[in-house]
Image (tube, rainbow, N blue to C red; front, side, top):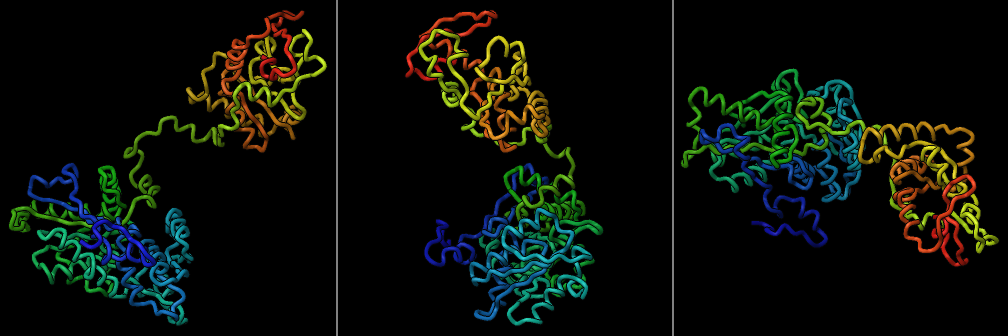
Length: 525
């Protein structure tokens, strides 16, 4: 095996990583029995994981072959290709890695999904959209395929490899893909692949016709009037000039729903692949079912009595995620619990904004030196730091019983209400009220918030934490006390100096006599 440890070093490391002749063959994986309804009939089915190439798609080898024979060193500056995605993305990577070309331009349909457009932008592609059919005929003067060809003819510094009309497309599979499969599975009896440009099936079919003619070659086309990313309908293959007709023994037609649902099943069983992979497997299923129905299935078996079938997994599913949901519907996917939370609690949290009680009190309060040694209620001994606001979210009665000096009551929560982080509907209600209140605050609130550092308190600290997130998102410097007043009570219980007393109104306060060096936190509580 070439490079069995799969390690690439030196100045050409990435080139070696991309090139199939300097890396192990792409995996060939037998699908689990739960996905093979014909296993008891002696049928074994293998996925050729073309998605495991560094470019993650079946078009990577054709792109390598096309550019190898199209780019002229010192002359070529721009590559232009009409592509639904995989080919031109592979070209953009290979052009940089092998040819130091950074100007790769994608011509494609205006019906391309936003996710795929962003993927192309992600890889640095210059995109031009064209109206009309999403899969124009190669010789249609009005389409993007011919537009790319004209651009290259008008400027010698530009090339259009043209996957639709360049034999280097399908010959890449004679050069690399076919030989890999035969080395991995010499007992192969059936090869199955989808047909878009028809390059993959033309190359594989031609290869196996020459080296092992007993291999039955199944091509798969899109069902009339339907669309699967990549392959075409049988009718749209008519103008394709590749010798595909001599490279297939049978053609199946498959629709989009089966393609997406079967690829979803493959993904969930560990073979992560896109919809065209499910498309290929469904075409293989249909072919096997026909042969079983007419009693000719056993004719495909090899010397071991089994039927070894290979289909291609062409790319990954991630760029098609929205299409999976659109095509299949909600019944194919698990329910999202608490999905209503996707519309609330939208802002970030930061542990730095949630202060330990002692730290918060020392940060937000200062001692009145003149009264430091006096035996007076604590509300007279400490005061908030300048340009701070202390906002207490508890109910008025609780606020009246005890509150931090200088704080303002803005009631939002009740003591018996569970934490917003344990009850999703409480979080939703609280966040909406906070958002509404602070989105357009009253004049009194604006005075509390404007150019001030804000400390938020509640019963257990959690509601104040939510409020901190809301205020921070609106540009205010807000913090909360971790654990809220429950934590403050625990801090007070730990205090060894002082005693409880009641003021004239019957409100409990701490009457303490402390030296100046005792932290404010020890006095406030």
